[in-house]
Image (spheres, one colour):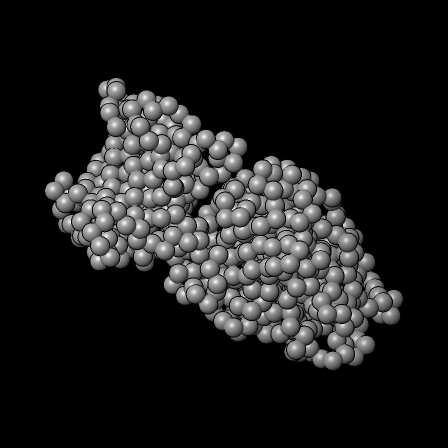
Length: 639
């Protein structure tokens, strides 16, 4: 390697400077992770070279792909080299000078200085290269892409303090060399035994040889100057009986660039007309870009152990985009394009099988470890609900994995399954009842629950932003239909009618309903007497096919206009306030009371009033009226 031009100095992106400061000062106890990250990057570079070599075999030649580690005690340096794809000048600037990922601001907001929490966040965000500065005063990266000439190399150098330099160099060999000038208190990483231990701990599963050079690197098997330290066999190709849990966890961290442990995993080999191996993981922490549909997603795809892509989206549906892992196929053509893969009938069959495997894995986790499944649901429950719309063939299986708040829940955390609900229901109960609300608290205190509580009927409480949309695709579960108790008319058990009664049966009630409807005609569709209310004066009920508040908010957020509709107002004739309203002879005061009752019904739904100030004025007028004072400020009629 020879320098051929003067270096240029650049400033790090502001987010990188902040990240480097936090890593250096927060992660002292996790220092050894730097080696795992550098070896992982080197392995990825070798994988990418093998992929590009499918179209251009001359890129690889007959050189064995490997990762080499060298220690120079006199110079105080540790070097990690690979002969993989390498980087161009532009790629080095993009990958080492900036954080070129979505969600940067949110990521940095969550960095707190707490060692354990920050190390997990750094892993989620995939910026492991910067961990080199935990142990190094200076980092030097020399690289040349495999498809560039020898004089087109680049040298990157930085002390992590805010700037880096770039210099054009001549580099005879393709690939990347990362040299760390270790800090005085990091001398442990100049000990060969320590480095070999870390390689076996973190990188034994790497499918490329990780070699060490220098005295002692032979690991006691002779005096060779260079010796492979790791097993150098792809972990997923080994029998499950030969792989322990620690190896599975470390492999997950390698492919997911995640510092946290996975919740569970599934390792399977399929033989027969279609041969493939899959190793699929369920993470314990959602990535920051989970809701960014443009973010990289999918499993790593290998064909006959040759890396193809780490964004193979064809093998799992979008609602399972949180799954990480590897799929290694033996019967897909090595030169297929992305479009051809999507049209391959073998891929469709594999996608169906892998989807069921993930859902079965989640089902086993839910039964074996409630705490871990609660973690999964907290992180990925909303994503899983998308499957109700996307995957009709597995809809009931997905429904069985859903978790809900409920009137029978002891905690605000969703912990009730549909099977729990059915196990608690009476034998003759034909429906699964649920209520949509804007928050768990609003749902739990809703007037709609009163008749159900009186009868001991459990109601599922749904407050997630996509629940109304998702429930459109869930008609029934194990023969039981779903009923939204906040819309239409409901028949409860024992043949008792929970919806409105015929107003004509009672002349006084009929007259009251007509008076209220005249006052509120611009704000409600119908006014009717209800049997679902036991304690509250009134509640709002949607018509059977009206769009609810959650869907209106989703449409609004997407720039769409929801069709106009008005709710129904149901009144409880046994409530003292409704009785007082029925006795009110003064039309202005009747209008005031009717409007306040409607506003209160809306507030009980957890909704925001269109004109809160007007509501306050109306309530103030009522308070003043109790003292016999003037109602001069009263606004009559609807507002």
